[in-house]
Image (cartoon, rainbow, N blue to C red; front, top):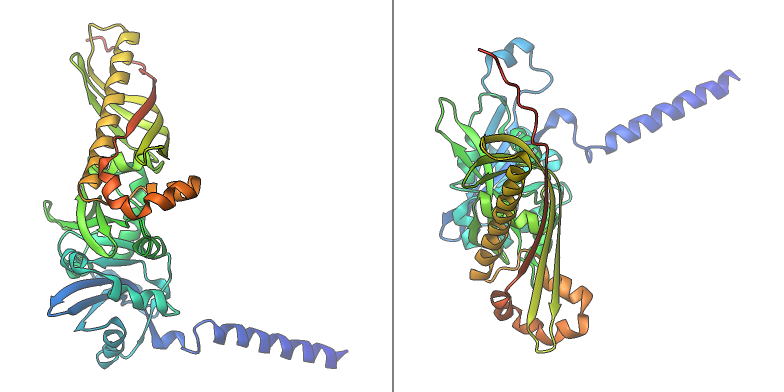
Length: 382
């Protein structure tokens, strides 16, 4: 009996040791340092400048040391022709191996994005460590500037970027694009990739990061950008609006409306003459959160006026975004893909002319909006 218990204990110990030694591909925890964010900028002459943000203060650091430090990250910079060589060259200045499994984001500098990013992203798609669900962003300036910014509220800008992206659902003025989605669309014959735009805001006492707007790519090159309002218009159409505020103005007053529910759909169709029609359908439930004016209006009439203004605002956003993509011949909506799925035979006959057909479409926008909750007004006696 004792012999069996002893054997069981040994077997359990061996199993645990095997599990733990295999987690890090043979690398000890003390020998690695986690990458938090990576930036890719153009350095001219076909070279790329890579900025890597890593966590600096580990669990061994005392609480006193952490409290004294304004930030707990370090930045490595290198310039070269390919990512793999630059990553390995960092071992000349770091005693730790880089571990990519915790990387939060890949930030593309604007100039590099305009020149093309296919070669730069190949390492992250091919190597076994980097995750495919890492967030893709485009810097308004350089990625280096973003990753070197020390933030007041967050010791790790890379982590802060992830939290910022998670919070964007409350305004629906940016997109969540990961590496897998970006690379898939980059290789698509018709659908163009998009990524959110990130910038450093120095308007206050302390710098902060701001994410809003949309970068539009054609294959692997940045060709256009959408502002906040146009980005919302795109999100309405592709059913990715989660929440946010719709501000409207009428002849009688103004109102701020909360987006409570929304649904968007695209219905493209290849006609007999080879032209393509498109219907964009949007329905939304909005709640009145603030009002100014309308004192002389009956509640029902005021709500009707606000509802009509909301319909027009949504329509303008949707059309503005779509027309911008037509200007640059960039199908970010995946309309070509939808036609391929729904009308494969007809699509085959027009596929080669898609870039010419896309700008000619005149979308029909159908909007159904329901505005609720005029709200209770408390009258104070003075």
